Image 1 (tube, rainbow, N blue to C red):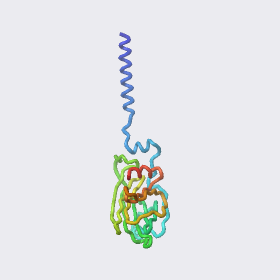
Image 2: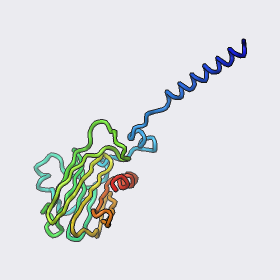
Image 3: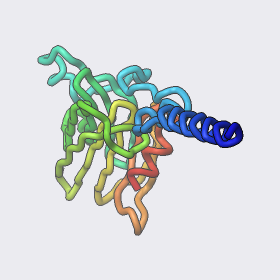
Image 4: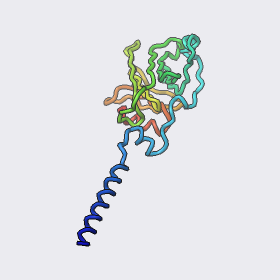
Length: 195
């Protein structure tokens, strides 16, 4: 009988260990996965601002309590594209190089709120889109750690860029310019998710 008791006891211990190990596994949410792979992405609101000349939002910002913090500027032929944040969320402005106070598109999107149940690597996104003149169109996706802008315009060839932005030029497969702002390690997964 002693061997049977020992086998039964070993099975009971094995079952308890298996239950204990199962209890230690975690249900990994996207946020937890991002943090378990290393440090979390730096929030856009904490990124270093760039200085710009001829602020197209200056007149609007003077009437608000919250002025924009510009993170990136892209010059593309006759256009100037600006990506910014404020305390509420993300923004994108398209203006003419020759008339810097004439806004073609001004998009804003609030920071996402609530539980982050998305599978995107940089968190949940809120989205806004708008049309401008000359058949231009833009879509802004705003998360707390990255923002993407898909921008369509008949003539958009990038000449220069400043700030925390990566760019994908238009192609036959993707006819829009794609701008991604955020810290360097957040831009790559945001690009992959956006294309």
